[in-house]
Image (tube, rainbow, N blue to C red):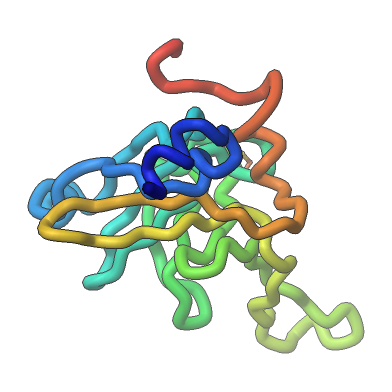
Length: 157
Ligand code: FES
């Protein structure tokens, strides 16, 4: 059975879905935090969609669960409370405004730095919210604060 296999194999276990709470609760609070296989994540409920990502900001480890959600260029973002970096909820991209030095009067344009914050998978089953950790093989900047010596677990702070 799959469950038995995942209990024996730590790598397989990390890829299993973990129940983090009830749908009715997150719909009220619009965000929750959870520890999924020893990784701290934040789950947002925004405009009818769920989004999960590493809780510590890729820039310097800021607490994203305390940030505001705002739209930039039509894309919902969490704004880190520490230095106001903008991270798209759907993809984990870092957004910034670029100015053309040859035309400083032109309106600044929103651009992407690429995926900076690791996004995890949220599923809902029978009123329960599950998070499955991303197993995308690329190195994501937010991994730095989610693993190793910089990992900050809520219960210890
Ligand atoms: Fe998030 Fe600096 S720690 S913007």
